[in-house]
Amino acid sequence: MLLFAFLFGFTAYGQKKGDDFSFVFLTDIHLRPDSVAANAFSKAVRKVREIDPDFVLSGGDQVFDVMRGNQAKGDSLFRFYVEQSKRFGKPVYNTVGNHELFGIYKESPEDSNHPDYKTGMYERYLGATYYTFRHKGWHFFVLNVLDVENQAYIGNVDDRQMSWLKEELSRVPADAPVVLVVHIPLVTAYGDIYPAAGGGSGKPLVRNRDALLEAFKNHRLKLVLQGHLHWFEDLNIEGKTHFITGGAVAGRPSWKGERHGPRGFLRFDIKNGEATYEFIAYEG
Image (tube, rainbow, N blue to C red; front, side):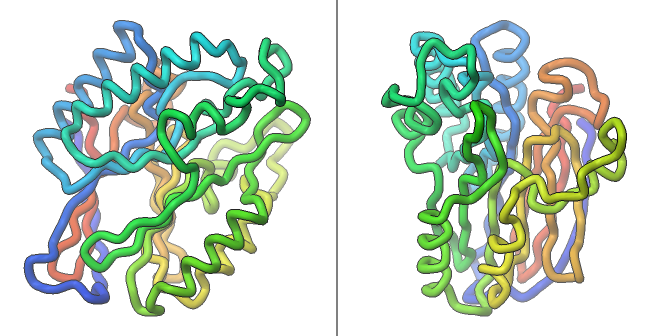
């Protein structure tokens, strides 16, 4: 097992002795019922069960994929993930990813009039696409940063969700530690390391990223957990917020090779007012 350990300390609001906890962040699982994906996922499940965290956070792209429609196939993929994720034996908090947007591509036999279109199928199997929960004094926000435009996905937080977020944050004490979970990264150096042909656009991957982060300006946003890019990075911005892109359970490209590092996930431990995390490569 390959492991990298990191430590960053701070005092946690409302955290008392005995309130220590751990969780794992897995992203881009890309699960499908074939021997390669299923066997690799089983390895990740076994490693998570060894860790025995309080809960599991999944950063999106749980299944691969439903963007091209086909209801029977989509149903089978989501049913497979729902059943397989029970093997963690812990609460699982999911995030919607682009590969879970049903029937958005032009070649889909289903169109925007279908009840499962876009997030309909995800919601039917996995619940709300954005929500919040609290665990031992920590506030977690899981958001949907995806939308559809011209039969393709884009990074964007819609107005309804933004209003909901501001209302929820108004109830969170200013000194309480906050964790934000999204699929498409809000802050990343990926485009600098792997610039697109002809140079990157320089624009955020989520169009209204700045407005989204502005909503947290009066809160202790300690962690932003991200996925989508299938690589691992930790950007400590102004010594206040760690923007961590969590690699991929599926690797890159999906279930093949290790171009941007080994396949794995992150384990977080909150103990005595300090947060530590480890990148765990579950193979080998």
